[in-house]
Length: 160
Image 1 (spheres, rainbow, N blue to C red):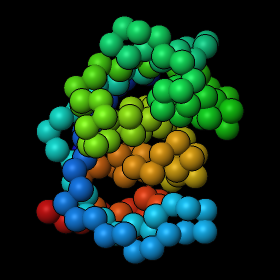
Image 2: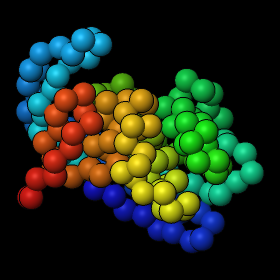
Image 3: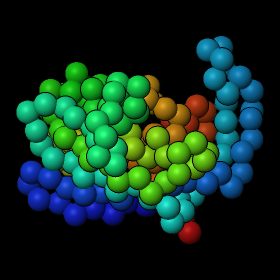
């Protein structure tokens, strides 16, 4: 689920947490990642992400500048390498950290969605980049009920 408010220079997104309703480990890929088959859904917790077009990349979480270990910072850096545009990102955390509900993936997904909306890059072209940040990022970019397979790169929406 995604909510946003936009002008030409900035937008604010709500990226919702996720819960795994069903999780089946189908094996292990040669690279060590699990082959997963899951049913996921968004829940009411969310992070609010404000993105503003900028001359340099900056990511703040609850007012604190983040380093390159932060998933949102990594997402923004990889997008800038691929497409050249820059953003200032301000994240207001509402999803608890380390709770297993996709908090860091939500932040990275918010960066991808904001980049897509502000700069007109279709999210489908960002999937390989998103997958390199984290397994849940592609799902978090769309949210809602979905069947998620593989390493998380195969997302099939489910009608409510």
